[in-house]
Length: 490
Ligand code: ADP
Ligand code: MG
Image (cartoon, rainbow, N blue to C red; front, side, top):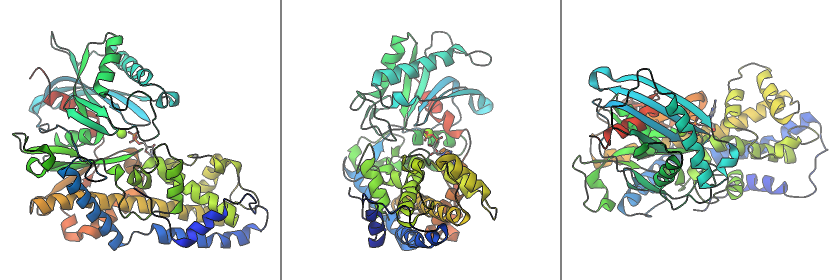
């Protein structure tokens, strides 16, 4: 899973920065703005995603999907069997909980379902930020924290939420990290991603980890469905719309799942469910073939907690976009005196620049880019002149454009796989791709680039059938809906 090196000049510019004698005081700001231009040009060339590149990526995703469905370990894409072979129909009734361990946040939710007539009678949720030390602590500490917050939330139950006598509360547990699912309510963690490095969880059943923590608190709840966040998103959207076939998450990390024909999954080895369908979690964050990568990506990967892994995620998802930009700016500051005579100290802090910052800067449409200047001052503690602000915006746009367009190519890779297997399944009728995650939700430029790539790849006629949508609360209740579908009281 090697990361391709960038084109020559980008590499050589970056290589120059490793010299211990960095030329920091050397030129006026005006001439410096000229000298960073070749770095930008090289970056734009290396990150370019013209149609042939998009097509290559979409085709590689399709091929990797097939290889991953044939046999475990057949490709970068794990193509994990979710054990979800039934999706919500609207008939679901009762009180159900959902628990979402995503990345930066942890969410608990309860929903009262009233069947076809009543639908979602009521829903309540709470969002909890995961303390940083828990992301690097022990498994027990993390799950004890989750159980504690769950208990506090359950204590506030009341009003229109009622649990029938003699029943345990049932939870749909959304766990958005790679899992080897062993049944609808069990699965072992393959590896932590997205900056988590909790000891003692890898190789363990995460449902057992949660159950043990709940037992320690004497909480009588149990997990009826363990679902990936993409699967929860799909289920939540399906509840309202039968045409939803694919779900994609673009937040801290990224992933996608889709509704597969069970007979197309060789590794099920004939154990096909009677419904004839199976939701497959692609784990596409691990994709790596043919991506247009730069030296900055390679350096970031080497420094990451999971080097060599999750390359697609590191190219397109929210956790990494700002860090790639920062690394380019370091190069521009060192080789082109982007910030004038001295390099701001804070520029060397990894992950100091985040995707919400890029997004906020890209919304500044004023001539003097005052908002960009003030954001940069807040982050780096220095004033940045207008030509440097423009340059920084160009860098942001280059990285965000590559990310959005590659995400679009990924979606087309999935759609074309489905269409190749069942002619007319998607492209001759309405098909919905449900999106979730704050990067997609809050970054209009990213969304636009993604949509452009889908249209370029599919053509304007076919892409009219493909609805890429984001519904605000679909994903939240998806896991609770699956807890209802797989309730032990049914
Ligand atoms: P998670 O991925 O942890 O489940 P989210 O879907 O809310 O949670 O994604 C959070 C990530 O989305 C943040 O880490 C950040 O990278 C990105 N993000 C959040 N807000 C914005 C924004 N306004 N613009 C761009 N990216 C954002
Ligand atoms: Mg999430």
